[in-house]
Image (cartoon, rainbow, N blue to C red; front, top):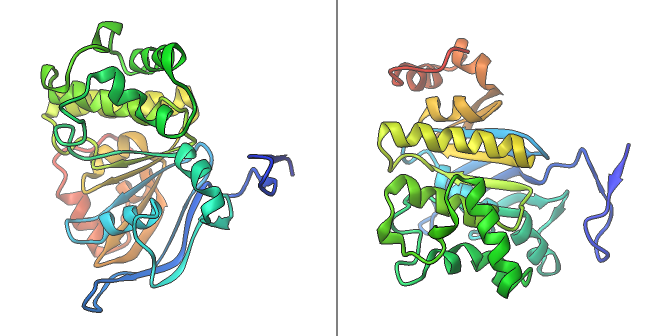
Length: 266
């Protein structure tokens, strides 16, 4: 089995090791009620996984756990096969980037687009100045936005364009895994199709692994090969997206499939 070395301070990582994994993770609200109960899921290099469920199913909590913004009550969050530790956090932040749900609130209205997209490059110490500007220009081009975007402000763009800018920011440092949190739920039908197509294209062209968190099975079907169905904080069904759409096993999953007016043909 071949190996890759991620940095000089780390142990060599087997290529089959997931980039990010939850293993038997549970999380409790402050009052003690379970929000997530014994959840296991993993995303490996080049994989695309959809995490679906209704509002309140625990999707946002799982995303917070995967981003190390919350600590599990039990179980493990593993990055490259090992628990997250202070010495690996910089590599984790470079390897795992996020696109948030609302393109109107996720971009700082006081900054020009050049500064917004360059933020990961600055914070991770990857590039500054002309080098950063060249990387930002290339990242914007990869999402279909011209160089004249650089010196404008977020209010000058539509919701779909803002989400493209957010995707450019998330991919400018060439992460290995993109976490997409309801990335099209705030967009109109036409624009959401364009953004979904863009995510699928970037996955292919950049070799990105993708975890898409969504209540919308049609969006997940267009991007993700594997789907994990979450209900009341527990995983109730996991499998190939096409198989789940064609013949869901669980009643809850059947209701999710039935609620989508039109799904892509499996």
